[in-house]
Image (cartoon, rainbow, N blue to C red; front, side, top):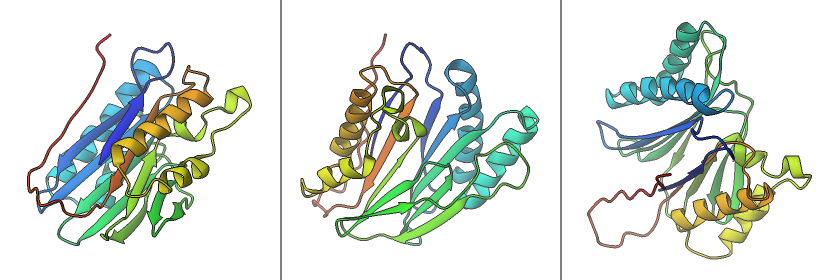
Length: 230
């Protein structure tokens, strides 16, 4: 898996928050939230949502229940006055599936056998009322499966300049390269979004790519992060 993200141009703090947590029964979960507005206020909102979801997932709570609880918590904490989008992507080794939980108008893309599938059923952001339910899809783990999730900064890239980014075209170009490399895919999509925003991202952009690849014989786990300090 790989993540690429950047903040809105001329904004020091990104309103997107991403957290990674190991599942107590095996596997990993990525929690991605995008707070309403941008900057410090948006960061505070997305932090509230991710913290609640991650704490529940770490305790073994199911993904859908964790998303609903995070939504109810944000509603109670901010009296329903703010909202956030939420994605939870889980590699569940108990069920041998990828569990995709969406409270986000932006779709999640699946690539299976070189075909792109959009998970885009209508769903609401979290925090605006009690009892908001996510869209949940459970996909069997299979070789070559790719999952791509992102915040609306990618969807809307280029909109203000009159030439909107075509995500489907970009993913098809990546498919042509052969075996997916999550870091390459995430970086490419981010680079394209920045280019379509003419080098000045109009919104926070976060992209998560998960791929199931052939086993290399290496049983170690690694996590690498790069963050410029400015």
